Amino acid sequence: MAKINGNEIRPGNVIEHDGGLWVAVRTNTVKPGKGGAYNQVELKNLINGTKLNERFRSAETVEQIRLDLKDFSFLYEQGEALVFMDTESYEQLELQKDFVGDRAAFLQDGMMVTVQLYDERPIGISLPDQVTLTITEADPVVKGQTAASSYKPAMLENGIRVLVPPFIGSGERIIVDTNEITYVRRAD
Image (cartoon, rainbow, N blue to C red; front, side, top):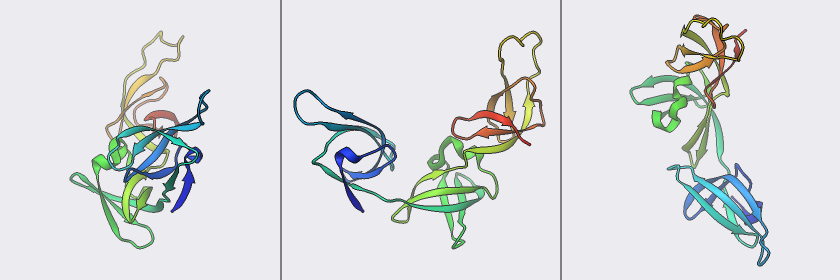
């Protein structure tokens, strides 16, 4: 672990602060007219998700944490647990659905994900930014709505609803952004 000054904290840095693991979400350097400059940092707890605003002066030091990133393959869903396999050691890892969040619906058999580990304990997971899914049902196009860019609701094979352009129909494969849960384009 490396020590960094309080004014060197940048968004995305994981630090140890007040006995917990925090990721810097937003930083802002403030130079008041009186007194020394400081770094105003919005922190998010990696374990329980609470947020905190903290001031760090340049003389203060914090521990910067290095997270291990490991590739896992999604195997299957078992009740409220999701089972992943380490691609190197073939060991299995079970994570609760609420740990993955709403994006658990985008998991597909064999999908590669990256799990962030701290002391061999999972603290975060990142899915691919885009996935290809089939539309199971789409509303028909309403005539006369062509003047504005009108989108219509469609149901995906995983049960998620997204807005798609009027020319997309049921049975077509589209690419969906897993972070924003939005339509990107037709799949090739």
